[in-house]
Length: 174
Image 1 (cartoon, rainbow, N blue to C red):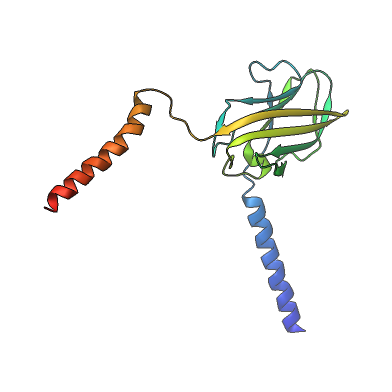
Image 2 (cartoon, one colour; image 1 turned 45 degrees about the horizontal axis):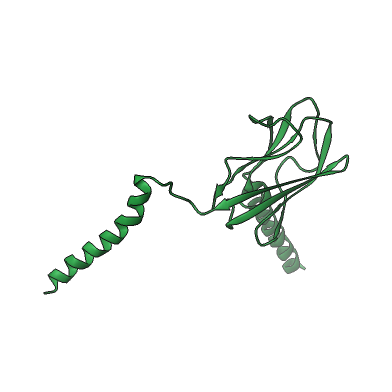
């Protein structure tokens, strides 16, 4: 009987550690913010797109016409894998009309703590009550170096460095 009690106590300790660890990585929380610049209608906006691989992004769900309750939010990656909203506040979230407020989301609100993990077209799906679905698509790319002197040097210098290293090592071996 003592052995069973000690196993149960150990299981309780492990369960509490797992519960604390599970909430410890929830360093994300969607927040209600004022309308971002340029947003004037109900819908979803992703500012600063295209996002780079690993970026968190700035996605806004905005309601300006009538009060709506957000009942479900999903993020769909390029492979059609669905990520459910796991942020805080918990669903349902009511956005009042006239308050000009938006729900600010990032990739971590969907459990993607390291940011967007796939290149391609992503989709945000938001269901509301009264019944309306908002859909927004945005792109995630590899980090792109803009066409400039830095971009040209980033392409040319590694090749030149490898060639120079080869010449130095070859001359030392003779």
